[in-house]
Length: 122
Length: 456
Ligand SMILES: Cc1cc2nc3c(=O)[nH]c(=O)nc-3n(C[C@H](O)[C@H](O)[C@H](O)COP(=O)(O)OP(=O)(O)OC[C@H]3O[C@@H](n4cnc5c(N)ncnc54)[C@H](O)[C@@H]3O)c2cc1C
Image (cartoon, rainbow over all chains, first blue to last red; front, side, top):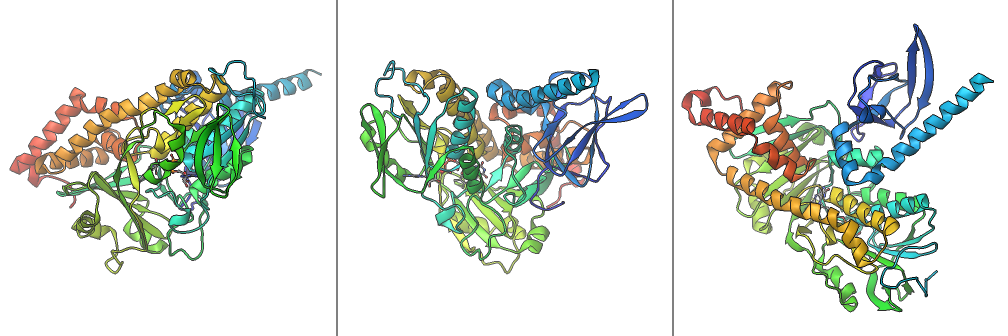
């Protein structure tokens, strides 16, 4: 995985990339490998999602000032690129269409959550 | 479909079935096509995009190469990742995590503030002329494939001429074909030889001012690239008249040497190669002639009149960033033009309203960039000031938690990661000026000099 030609930072299997409850000021884009999004509730771990290469996570920190809502852990060897909040917000101010993909992904996640909720209510 | 009776010929816009010709499939042309199709789909608009590009980016040597140093900046890597464009390891020759700055009085190393590789070195084509087996993939080829993946058609032909017919641009290729388009996007770079094709259009367009630069490739093999260059870009700020700066960049099996300035010629290249600083970056036995060389033009000042009805110039043939992050500027102008074409229209008024601000931002920032490089030019032949700069950077690098004032300025200037106005603003901050003056005074004082930590 630590090829000379790859970008981002390496994480070993099980390494915590984002810690639930911590403050964050960046989002992440997976360059290689997989991660799991995990929420800890009353000492119980719930896997919310598994993300692949090209997916991003931690984007909520770019828009709100709340602590991280979930933890993100590397499943196997993983490469992740960090996107700085300031770089992102400056670019979005110059080119608002940069937010399209992010909004699209976020609305996809809301859709998924709605589906899960309605299944849970049945 | 050609719209014979568009609702207002003075205010043309793209409609379902509109045909767009993109002339040049380098970064600007590929980005434009990618984003035009993407944004048009979001507006339920079906446009037909033809990219005219005669080069085969998968061929080694100049035939497949758009000739540049091949550094993809930190800010562009992040922006592209947000756009869903990630550079695969096959395209990235090397992930860069530090810059080494060589001056006439010493050198210093600046590492990324976060422990992460966010700068890529790439080959625009398959690689140098003497390449026998391509282990990596062309950057331009990769972008062109992404645009084709979105739905653009690649026409492997050179455009010979463009003229007006029925109020629309007609594209004629070298192989004798011609076709009418609703919009012609020029992404043809800065080579003056390319400009003949637009003569018949009689535009107000005045091409960018250019200067000659120089690129040379040296085969080292991966082990020696690791040993001599590592994951560092090596930057040289030396008092050689006519040379703004030079760089040696690690690639897979090669080192790329790049010289930029207003007076780069054969003599200047030779005098740079014979400096102690340059020789330290390359093994002694390497032939200074290199295995592949070129002297491409570099854009020094933006074109004038970069658009009119149904016509727009993007990337290097329009405006680009002075000396740095030209591919980042190609992305910005391409995206601004695609956004304008989809959401506003393709008339001169539309470009004026939404393309011009991006163009101006780059042009105005270059004015400050000229000041930044003029200051560099002043500093590089002033021993004590240079010493002060190196001392300040070294001090900051030893204390990563302290404010990285000078390191940040040098990093952003040479990586091309920030706008020049942002860099300039930081250099006139009182704390910056105080620390810099203090370090320079310590350089002048014999006691301070003895305590200096700089390496040579
Ligand atoms: C020495 C040097 C070093 C540089 N280093 C860097 C760097 O490290 N990082 C960086 O970001 N930028 C760098 N740049 C700048 C960078 O190369 C340019 O900004 C970038 O290539 C601009 O992209 P473009 O698509 O506008 O033009 P180009 O890359 O020049 O592409 C133009 C394309 O148009 C095609 N074309 C031309 N005429 C015709 C025709 N008649 N018909 C069809 N197709 C045609 C060409 O074949 C070519 O593919 C450097 C430039 C130089 C000169």
